[in-house]
Length: 249
Image (cartoon, rainbow, N blue to C red):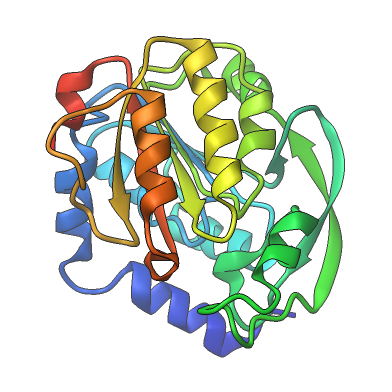
């Protein structure tokens, strides 16, 4: 069972005073009224809530049962949000989800992610102490049911490349998380997106809702930027867009 203190910490962090305004200001470059956003790895739903404040519909995908209970409370009565209790991967099926009951933000379906974190600076004390089977869907399957998204936010702790392997169309914009303990995953994601469409890229570090580069760049340039980051940068999000003007820093 997830520690109650961990759940309170997540809610306090992602719904902190003033954060909603900053998040909306950042995400409105990607979504507007009547559009559709996928929040993959929804956690406590702060991104999906921002999509709704911006007038977009949201599909919130989250495999952790405790967090799904939070999402049902947050979005109860809101027909503009569809909750999907699943992982997103390369093909439909079932997969083991590794839970970190003291830090639910880093639950993962990737054994390689757990191995990379073991002994890494900045990841001390992280323990994946439970594993539960969860259903797996794909981005293509979600689009078939809910519609083609205008923006996909993908934050699945080292499982991003597997999720993108289940995507066969090019959404207008997409973000995926990267970490400095698994830079190769980012490279795989960039290669997949470059194969899907003529994307340009920018990035933001940590929870900083500011783009790091003054202008969008190609996949090779953002890969090199990630490679050059110090280990202490830890994590961030790459933003891909078919409309480069949306991701000017």
